[in-house]
Amino acid sequence: MKKQVRWKCERCEDGLLAPSKPRLDDVRRYCLPCSSETGKLVERIAPALEAQRITAKQKYQKKVAKRKQIERSLDAVVRDRKKARKALVAHVEKEAAKIWAMMLEIQSEIPARYRLPHHGARQSAPRIEFGVSRTGMSGSGHAWVYQHRIELVLPHRFQSETTWHLLIHELAHCAVGVDEGNSHPEQMYQLMKEVYRRRWKIDISFGMLSGNRWGYEVDDLMEAQAVESGMVKWQVDAAMVKAALIKGGK
Ligand SMILES: [Zn+2]
Ligand SMILES: [Zn+2]
Image (cartoon, rainbow, N blue to C red; front, side, top):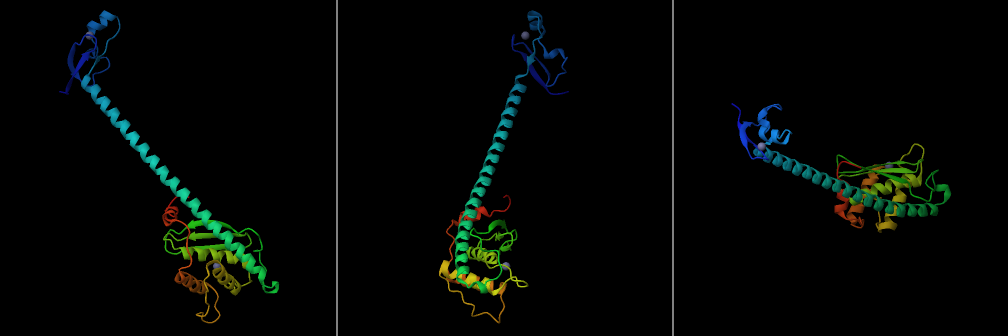
Protein backbone atom coordinates (compact mmCIF):
# COMPACT_ATOMS: atom_id res chain seq x y z
CA MET A 1 0.00 0.00 0.00
CA LYS A 2 1.24 3.47 -0.86
CA LYS A 3 2.11 5.91 1.87
CA GLN A 4 -0.95 7.87 2.90
CA VAL A 5 -0.99 11.57 3.78
CA ARG A 6 -3.59 13.68 5.46
CA TRP A 7 -5.81 15.78 3.21
CA LYS A 8 -7.84 18.52 4.77
CA CYS A 9 -10.60 20.91 3.74
CA GLU A 10 -9.57 24.45 4.59
CA ARG A 11 -13.20 25.50 4.91
CA CYS A 12 -14.49 23.00 7.41
CA GLU A 13 -11.22 21.50 8.62
CA ASP A 14 -12.58 18.06 7.92
CA GLY A 15 -9.94 15.64 6.72
CA LEU A 16 -9.01 12.11 5.72
CA LEU A 17 -6.05 9.93 4.70
CA ALA A 18 -5.39 9.46 0.99
CA PRO A 19 -2.40 8.77 -1.31
CA SER A 20 -0.10 11.74 -1.92
CA LYS A 21 -1.08 11.82 -5.57
CA PRO A 22 -4.73 10.85 -5.94
CA ARG A 23 -6.14 10.81 -9.46
CA LEU A 24 -7.73 14.07 -10.55
CA ASP A 25 -11.20 12.54 -10.40
CA ASP A 26 -10.57 10.87 -7.03
CA VAL A 27 -13.39 11.98 -4.77
CA ARG A 28 -11.00 12.20 -1.80
CA ARG A 29 -9.46 15.33 -3.34
CA TYR A 30 -12.67 17.20 -2.66
CA CYS A 31 -14.79 18.02 0.36
CA LEU A 32 -18.25 16.98 -0.69
CA PRO A 33 -20.29 18.64 2.08
CA CYS A 34 -18.60 22.00 1.43
CA SER A 35 -18.92 21.52 -2.32
CA SER A 36 -22.63 20.91 -2.07
CA GLU A 37 -23.06 23.82 0.37
CA THR A 38 -21.18 26.31 -1.87
CA GLY A 39 -22.25 24.89 -5.20
CA LYS A 40 -18.57 24.77 -6.34
CA LEU A 41 -15.95 22.02 -6.05
CA VAL A 42 -14.01 22.63 -2.80
CA GLU A 43 -10.55 21.06 -2.93
CA ARG A 44 -8.81 19.50 0.04
CA ILE A 45 -5.11 20.26 0.51
CA ALA A 46 -2.34 18.11 2.03
CA PRO A 47 -0.42 20.38 4.47
CA ALA A 48 2.62 18.06 4.54
CA LEU A 49 2.87 18.16 0.74
CA GLU A 50 2.42 21.92 0.71
CA ALA A 51 5.31 22.32 3.15
CA GLN A 52 7.47 20.08 0.97
CA ARG A 53 6.55 22.08 -2.08
CA ILE A 54 7.54 25.34 -0.39
CA THR A 55 10.89 23.90 0.76
CA ALA A 56 11.62 22.65 -2.76
CA LYS A 57 10.79 26.06 -4.16
CA GLN A 58 13.06 27.80 -1.66
CA LYS A 59 15.87 25.37 -2.46
CA TYR A 60 15.47 26.06 -6.15
CA GLN A 61 15.48 29.82 -5.61
CA LYS A 62 18.64 29.53 -3.54
CA LYS A 63 20.30 27.53 -6.30
CA VAL A 64 19.33 30.11 -8.92
CA ALA A 65 20.65 32.93 -6.74
CA LYS A 66 23.95 31.12 -6.24
CA ARG A 67 24.35 30.50 -9.96
CA LYS A 68 23.67 34.16 -10.65
CA GLN A 69 26.30 35.13 -8.12
CA ILE A 70 28.87 32.86 -9.78
CA GLU A 71 28.06 34.35 -13.16
CA ARG A 72 28.49 37.81 -11.75
CA SER A 73 31.92 36.99 -10.32
CA LEU A 74 32.99 35.40 -13.62
CA ASP A 75 31.94 38.59 -15.36
CA ALA A 76 34.11 40.47 -12.91
CA VAL A 77 37.11 38.25 -13.74
CA VAL A 78 36.63 38.85 -17.46
CA ARG A 79 36.15 42.56 -16.85
CA ASP A 80 39.31 42.76 -14.77
CA ARG A 81 41.27 40.88 -17.41
CA LYS A 82 40.02 43.16 -20.15
CA LYS A 83 40.95 46.15 -18.06
CA ALA A 84 44.40 44.73 -17.35
CA ARG A 85 44.98 43.96 -21.04
CA LYS A 86 43.90 47.42 -22.05
CA ALA A 87 46.33 48.94 -19.58
CA LEU A 88 49.11 46.64 -20.72
CA VAL A 89 48.50 47.36 -24.41
CA ALA A 90 48.39 51.09 -23.72
CA HIS A 91 51.64 50.82 -21.84
CA VAL A 92 53.41 48.91 -24.62
CA GLU A 93 52.01 51.26 -27.27
CA LYS A 94 53.26 54.25 -25.35
CA GLU A 95 56.72 52.72 -25.14
CA ALA A 96 56.55 51.79 -28.83
CA ALA A 97 55.73 55.37 -29.79
CA LYS A 98 58.69 56.61 -27.78
CA ILE A 99 61.07 54.06 -29.30
CA TRP A 100 59.72 54.65 -32.79
CA ALA A 101 60.35 58.38 -32.56
CA MET A 102 63.85 57.61 -31.32
CA MET A 103 64.44 55.24 -34.24
CA LEU A 104 63.34 57.86 -36.76
CA GLU A 105 65.69 60.34 -35.15
CA ILE A 106 68.61 57.90 -35.26
CA GLN A 107 67.83 56.96 -38.86
CA SER A 108 67.77 60.61 -39.89
CA GLU A 109 71.29 61.00 -38.54
CA ILE A 110 72.60 58.30 -40.86
CA PRO A 111 73.66 59.52 -44.31
CA ALA A 112 71.01 58.54 -46.84
CA ARG A 113 73.38 56.46 -48.92
CA TYR A 114 73.87 54.03 -46.03
CA ARG A 115 70.19 53.55 -45.44
CA LEU A 116 68.31 50.59 -46.84
CA PRO A 117 65.29 51.09 -49.04
CA HIS A 118 62.66 50.96 -46.37
CA HIS A 119 59.14 51.78 -45.44
CA GLY A 120 59.89 52.92 -41.96
CA ALA A 121 59.89 56.64 -42.54
CA ARG A 122 56.37 57.03 -41.23
CA GLN A 123 55.73 59.30 -38.33
CA SER A 124 53.49 56.97 -36.40
CA ALA A 125 54.70 53.68 -34.96
CA PRO A 126 53.65 50.43 -36.64
CA ARG A 127 50.36 48.93 -35.55
CA ILE A 128 50.90 46.39 -32.79
CA GLU A 129 48.97 43.18 -32.40
CA PHE A 130 49.25 41.18 -29.23
CA GLY A 131 49.20 37.49 -28.54
CA VAL A 132 50.11 35.35 -25.57
CA SER A 133 52.36 32.36 -25.87
CA ARG A 134 50.48 29.29 -24.66
CA THR A 135 53.55 27.28 -23.97
CA GLY A 136 55.20 29.85 -22.04
CA MET A 137 58.61 31.03 -21.21
CA SER A 138 59.77 32.99 -24.19
CA GLY A 139 57.89 35.34 -26.43
CA SER A 140 58.17 35.85 -30.13
CA GLY A 141 57.41 38.50 -32.65
CA HIS A 142 56.90 39.21 -36.29
CA ALA A 143 57.09 42.27 -38.47
CA TRP A 144 55.25 43.01 -41.70
CA VAL A 145 57.42 45.83 -42.92
CA TYR A 146 55.32 46.81 -45.93
CA GLN A 147 52.12 46.78 -43.91
CA HIS A 148 53.75 48.78 -41.13
CA ARG A 149 52.48 46.24 -38.62
CA ILE A 150 54.09 44.07 -35.96
CA GLU A 151 52.95 41.24 -33.75
CA LEU A 152 54.18 40.57 -30.25
CA VAL A 153 53.49 37.21 -28.69
CA LEU A 154 54.19 37.81 -25.04
CA PRO A 155 55.59 35.04 -22.89
CA HIS A 156 53.16 33.51 -20.47
CA ARG A 157 55.83 33.80 -17.80
CA PHE A 158 56.60 37.40 -17.94
CA GLN A 159 60.06 38.88 -18.31
CA SER A 160 60.16 42.57 -18.97
CA GLU A 161 63.47 42.82 -20.81
CA THR A 162 62.49 40.02 -23.13
CA THR A 163 59.35 41.86 -24.11
CA TRP A 164 61.04 45.21 -24.61
CA HIS A 165 63.71 43.53 -26.67
CA LEU A 166 61.05 41.87 -28.80
CA LEU A 167 59.42 45.24 -29.29
CA ILE A 168 62.67 46.92 -30.27
CA HIS A 169 63.55 44.07 -32.62
CA GLU A 170 60.25 44.19 -34.50
CA LEU A 171 60.19 47.98 -34.63
CA ALA A 172 63.74 47.92 -35.98
CA HIS A 173 62.58 45.68 -38.82
CA CYS A 174 60.09 48.35 -39.84
CA ALA A 175 62.47 51.25 -39.31
CA VAL A 176 65.43 49.78 -41.16
CA GLY A 177 63.47 48.18 -43.93
CA VAL A 178 64.16 45.25 -46.15
CA ASP A 179 67.58 44.21 -47.33
CA GLU A 180 67.17 41.73 -50.16
CA GLY A 181 68.25 38.28 -49.09
CA ASN A 182 69.11 39.38 -45.57
CA SER A 183 66.27 39.41 -43.10
CA HIS A 184 68.41 40.63 -40.19
CA PRO A 185 70.96 43.12 -41.51
CA GLU A 186 73.63 44.72 -39.37
CA GLN A 187 71.88 48.11 -39.61
CA MET A 188 69.05 46.66 -37.54
CA TYR A 189 71.35 45.74 -34.68
CA GLN A 190 73.22 49.01 -34.79
CA LEU A 191 69.88 50.79 -34.53
CA MET A 192 68.78 48.61 -31.61
CA LYS A 193 72.10 49.22 -29.88
CA GLU A 194 71.59 52.97 -30.21
CA VAL A 195 68.05 52.68 -28.82
CA TYR A 196 69.38 50.82 -25.78
CA ARG A 197 71.91 53.59 -25.27
CA ARG A 198 69.45 56.47 -25.60
CA ARG A 199 66.46 54.93 -23.92
CA TRP A 200 68.02 53.00 -21.03
CA LYS A 201 71.64 54.19 -20.91
CA ILE A 202 72.84 50.68 -21.67
CA ASP A 203 76.02 50.36 -23.64
CA ILE A 204 75.58 47.14 -25.57
CA SER A 205 78.79 45.53 -26.70
CA PHE A 206 79.08 43.40 -29.81
CA GLY A 207 82.62 42.51 -28.77
CA MET A 208 81.75 38.95 -27.87
CA LEU A 209 80.38 38.36 -31.31
CA SER A 210 82.11 35.57 -33.14
CA GLY A 211 82.76 36.53 -36.73
CA ASN A 212 80.24 38.65 -38.56
CA ARG A 213 77.00 36.89 -37.80
CA TRP A 214 74.01 39.14 -37.42
CA GLY A 215 70.82 37.45 -36.38
CA TYR A 216 69.15 35.85 -33.37
CA GLU A 217 72.45 35.09 -31.71
CA VAL A 218 73.05 38.83 -31.49
CA ASP A 219 69.58 39.27 -29.99
CA ASP A 220 70.46 36.84 -27.23
CA LEU A 221 73.68 38.70 -26.61
CA MET A 222 71.91 42.08 -26.39
CA GLU A 223 69.11 40.77 -24.26
CA ALA A 224 71.52 39.18 -21.80
CA GLN A 225 73.34 42.50 -21.45
CA ALA A 226 70.06 44.35 -20.96
CA VAL A 227 69.02 41.92 -18.22
CA GLU A 228 72.46 42.14 -16.64
CA SER A 229 72.33 45.96 -16.52
CA GLY A 230 69.11 46.00 -14.51
CA MET A 231 68.27 49.25 -16.28
CA VAL A 232 65.21 48.11 -18.19
CA LYS A 233 62.09 48.42 -16.11
CA TRP A 234 58.43 47.86 -16.67
CA GLN A 235 56.69 50.85 -15.20
CA VAL A 236 53.63 48.75 -14.80
CA ASP A 237 52.19 46.75 -11.94
CA ALA A 238 53.39 43.14 -12.17
CA ALA A 239 50.04 41.82 -10.90
CA MET A 240 48.25 43.70 -13.66
CA VAL A 241 50.57 42.26 -16.28
CA LYS A 242 49.95 38.80 -14.92
CA ALA A 243 46.22 39.40 -14.91
CA ALA A 244 46.37 40.49 -18.53
CA LEU A 245 48.18 37.35 -19.51
CA ILE A 246 45.79 34.86 -17.98
CA LYS A 247 45.01 32.16 -20.47
CA GLY A 248 41.85 32.28 -22.47
CA GLY A 249 39.70 35.11 -23.68
CA LYS A 250 40.63 38.19 -25.55
ZN1 LIG B 1 -15.18 21.08 3.95
ZN1 LIG C 1 63.47 39.50 -36.81
